[in-house]
Amino acid sequence: MKFQVKWLGKILDEQDSVIYKRAYKSKSFVRNFATFLKCAFINSAWDVVTIDGASKNISWHHWYDYPGGGGGFGGRIWVNAPEGDDSYGLVVGSSSQVFNKQDYTIYSKIPHGEGDPGTLYYRECIVDNILESDRASVLIKRTFLNYTNSEAIYVREAGIVVKSFEGSRVLLVRDVFAQPFTVFPNKKLELTAQLEVVL
Image (tube, rainbow, N blue to C red; front, top):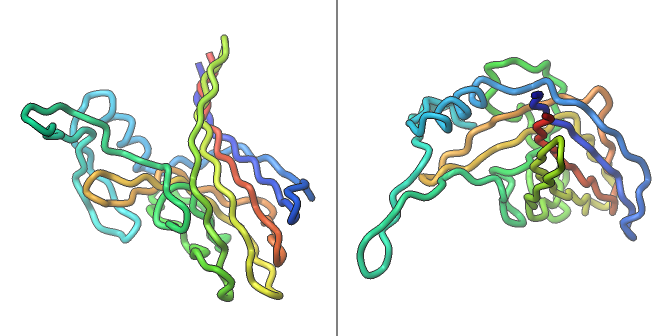
């Protein structure tokens, strides 16, 4: 059995036609990811470094009180960030800083914006899955739009950031692309991270 993450980036025009696309195989799980898996398997708290550099102990599940009494445990880790929220989900940046296992944040995040210099518009982060006879995949996809009038935006790094129930943001994967994705004005970058288990 093999576990892997693959990136697929597509530059699209205004009609969503593909200008070019490139695929990369991720080799960049950070320390937080290993901790995340360990604590998922034993249902315990996990010690992580959040994207702002703080050390936190975050538990895997949260007790929910139901209306009318009673309650139950529910998941407390999310990646499906809403439109306009650049704090978690798929997050992109402009830095080519070499990957390190201790990385806890995107080095130079390209923030969400609606035309301000150096920004991209972050659409909703969509999560889907694929189940086949020999593999199972989770797809995390997000589209980034360049609404600036004349500035090309260069995406050199990308990461998967999860949000915990209490609001902490934790980086699990950070990759630096061998070649940047160039997003010209009025063009889009559609980026997909595919987390895949191959049997």
